[in-house]
Amino acid sequence: MIVVLYLLQSSFFIHLELAGVVPNLLIILTATAGIVSGSREGCIIGFFCGLLMDLTGGGIVGMYALGYLIAGYLAGIVNRFFYKEDITFPILLVAGTDFFYGLYMYFFGFLTRGRMEFGFYLLHIILPEVVYTVILALILYRPVMHIVQRQSSKGSEERIA
Image (cartoon, rainbow, N blue to C red; front, top):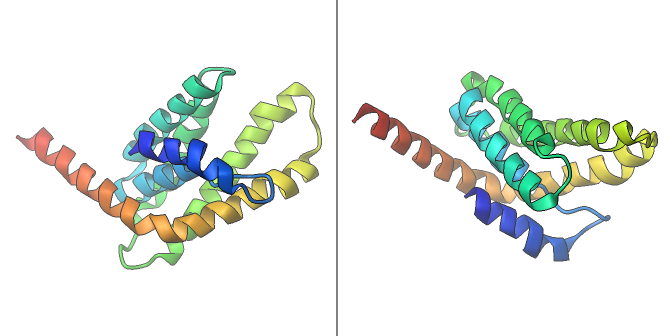
């Protein structure tokens, strides 16, 4: 699932760029895994999403992995408050997770290189990406949630056996 969403994000949605940004499908997956299965699962999924980004995007290996790992952990904290029927809370959490990830990337990707234009980055990159990601999360959240739940229950059955 990580590879499929990464390929969609980096090949298909690159052509559907709006306001200079593409949606972050891997954040949708990471946040959903955390919401549905808890912090541990969110961390694991997030780490591998970020590692894939690190290995294909160049730069400092581990920067994306750590960002996605933390995002998965934060999304997983609310696992005990999750109600399967309610979509509002998970969508807001996806927005919050993507916003956190944008701040993380600003701090480690731009601020450390001396770029101080936080207002510009917030208005032209972070917020448009959050909006675009939330719009797609409204469509993708339930299918991704069902796949994550199925994989999570399948993994727990294998551990019992």
